Image (cartoon, rainbow, N blue to C red; front, top):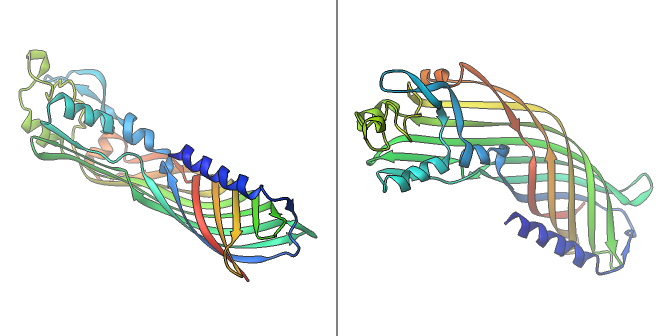
Length: 309
């Protein structure tokens, strides 16, 4: 999908190049507003779908002896899907994949700086929040034992200096620009992993004694559930600072003063966030205070409208 969007944008840029390029006859100023989409928010897609997050506690047998890999603080979606298939549906899984964000953009742009008409500068304010993905739940024989949801919100204020080239008719242009941004954002995860209830459902089912795959003390697939359980956790990690950014785009005139534009904006911004857990199980699995990277940047595909002012 991302490749298709990139190819579509490049095709639009090539159409803009079909006419002879020239500097515009007079500088313009614009107020702009745009809507966009950002994929794999906070770069957590791998954690959500295939990696999960290990607990600081070991798995233990029914006698309390540690063994194998650590317990899980976060279950990956592919593990739950595998459980669903392996158990013939006794373990249910509802997955939604990586987080996808919606982006709202407003800004001001000025062409013709330093006495060069083809140069422009811009300042924008971007707001991005999750609109889909990042929701995972699981059931055992109809009882919901796991429910986790990821969240994301970010503000960025990118500034740009760039080059814009118009066609001979002076109504369509392509542009490229780079600059710096101020960012402030956070991601978090909330939910419950009800291990005691899981153990109640699977009591005595220990593969070491010939039981099925759902054993709580030495279970092959659900033995790594965090113990104690995680109840109504809601931890979040925030960061702010200065990052780099660039964009490539194209615009075309559709009214006397209005221009339709398409852009691919890339923002590089990240920092370290520290979050406090709110449950005993969360503190046991991770720590009372946990530090994780916060990636605010990414690529945003945007369409919008510029009006000359």
